[in-house]
Length: 411
Length: 115
Image (cartoon, rainbow over all chains, first blue to last red; front, side):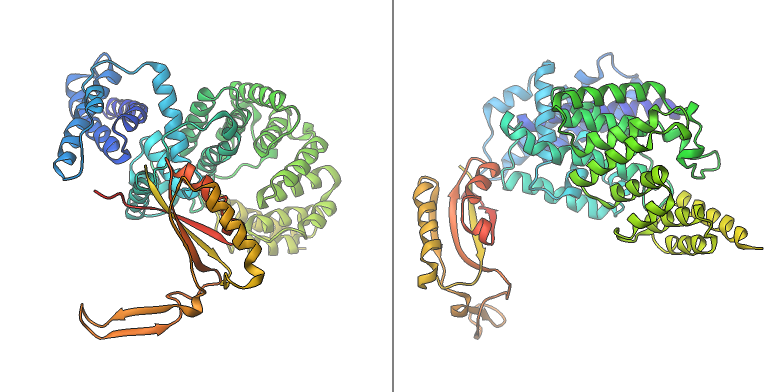
């Protein structure tokens, strides 16, 4: 009954993350709240496969976690200097569920605490995966490409810093929100990127990181529906995710955009992504941020019926804006590809000269050289590309392209 | 109320030199403006006046002193403020008013509360 156990585990994980936020506020300590939810989750995983999932799993987990928290707090209070807070104990002894609005506010508090700018970016991602997605340190280690021990240490230090430095458990005021949202959106976006292009290639972990990132983006947009940045991040993730099924063939090989079966793209995700993007752009009144621009580029591709119908002039215009708003290697290379589609490979090669070489840079250069019939140079560029880190499918794709170009050099 | 030590790291200057007068005045202004939060503060003589003290083995062992600061860095520890703030956000807001924040860096460290 693996599937059934899987769904119990999934229910426990998702509900556990939901109740954690409120418990952290009540007990005022991330570690104790996490331990209490963890113990309640283990109790559920032990009992539910036998007794069946209770009619109200959330209530069951909430009451059990509160009880575990009381035990943990009592144990803590044996230590000198720890005073038990009466109000806290009364709230923990309740058997009713907190109202939705309270859970809503607590989740926002948790998000802004996990993504506090005084925590390092990888720590923010680790904390978000632990507390908001309920993943284990081993699973998080897989996402962050590190060891379980290092992840556990990182999480412990983060909880200690939150407690010792009094990182507030609070939603930033309206006038602070704009300054605090980029860190939160950055966590969601980096998480998606980590799932989308794991550097070491194969499926190193058993979690669908992209799905977790989309879930977080949905949550953030749901909690802050009037903010343009979370809407743009969700739009970007949906538009990218919509194309995921067609990016690899049945053998796990890379399928480039020009050869993708657009019929396999998720039309409803694209429609929703474009709608979210339009709303977000409308509200930000023309001042597009990096997420809106990336989503707009993804939307342009999604709109084209076929590769040859792509509006490259518009995509170049969007990339021009993107590299001026948020310059990055990835944006620079995307712009090179768009320019060479719009104005030919020579224009693209000229732009490449200004960017820092990387495996992807060499791979892009190879394709542009090949389009000029310079196959020997193209094969050489792919050899350079294969010299650096890449995912397994990427590596095989580049080896395949190099073999094609080498054959074309033969008389 | 939580306490934080705000350590100022700046160029290793002599605060009494005439060319430091303007900056020193800025620190004084900070001190007046945030007087209700500041529990203690000090500016330090330059690191050239520092002495590192170590005792060989255990307590009572030979006292070994070396000339100069514990760690040679481009920016030196030049002063501190013990401040009170409700949380880290508030402490950062205060620390960001210290001239060292733009002339160097301010390290904000939570102080362990007395039991």
